[in-house]
Length: 163
Image (cartoon, rainbow, N blue to C red; front, side):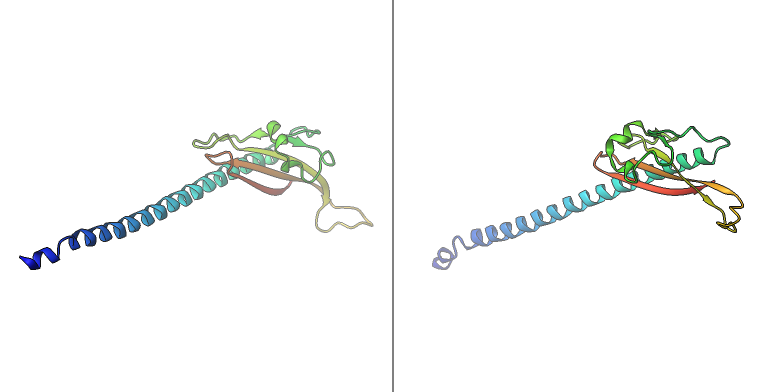
């Protein structure tokens, strides 16, 4: 019996150390899992914003490619050549008058929008300064903005369209 009395409490200390180690492992695993979930959510949100911007870009290109062009003026969504600065689309206040995409998307904070800018006309291939252009073609810049589920996730895409 004297042998048993000397071992008293050792199992308790060993068990407590084991529980502390297990707790540290579980806490570390939970932190890693939460971080991975946040990263996956952010990636999904960015993909959703990109898809929304692509839909708006396509809507703007369809307007430019239509049978008749809209009237271009000094404010969004249709800007005449020389009526804006190159960074017009960077000012968030200008997006309040932008056109909405023709497609309604679910799961986004607000529907995607686009602005069409008329650019100065260009000469087509084969023209010269001395004899003039064979034909002049209109150039248009379509800028689209899409938001994800969060208003903090925004994607802006641009394309230049010749007609």
